Length: 220
Figure (cartoon, rainbow, N blue to C red):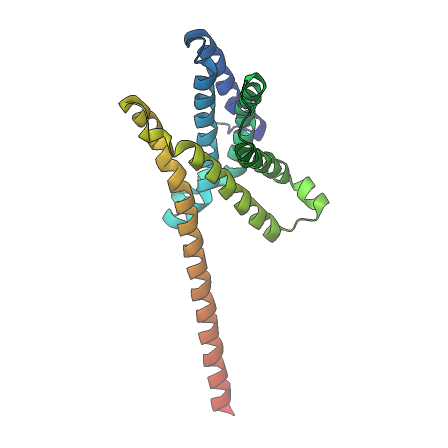
């Protein structure tokens, strides 16, 4: 079976939220359409972000069974950026239609999240990173900062939702809240495991070097 190309992942990820918006426009009450569409498209985007940002950590923690997910991280990341355009468009429409000013700190906070989404999408293109002279180590650092900031934005958005409304609201939002917490914890645990592994390798190398030195001194 042929695997999907990056472009096909991006198109598929974008078509679904567009369909959501159309369906909500038909089915939801007039006063609720925008709010429902914002919630639905945010959750859809978050699923792609989770797939893109946790694959490497899952491989580190649980082995090669998650290798296929990790290999598709870039495809999923670009699919997330594409799908999120629909949500960003709805937010822009909300800001345009709102009669009350949006709090400035929220504009900055969420605006930086959007900045990181599309900065990382652009920097995932090798020709751009090469043109900018960004080496792989710097790219990993930049990507980690951007991913964790985006994760923080999603966590901030999802955090209060499971604690308000009825049982249905809790059931809808609780899995996303748990995933929003679990993603950073998985990446932190994976980073700690990799650091511990490097320390063991360094300690083993030092021990071998010390043994070799002792052998040389014994011969002399």
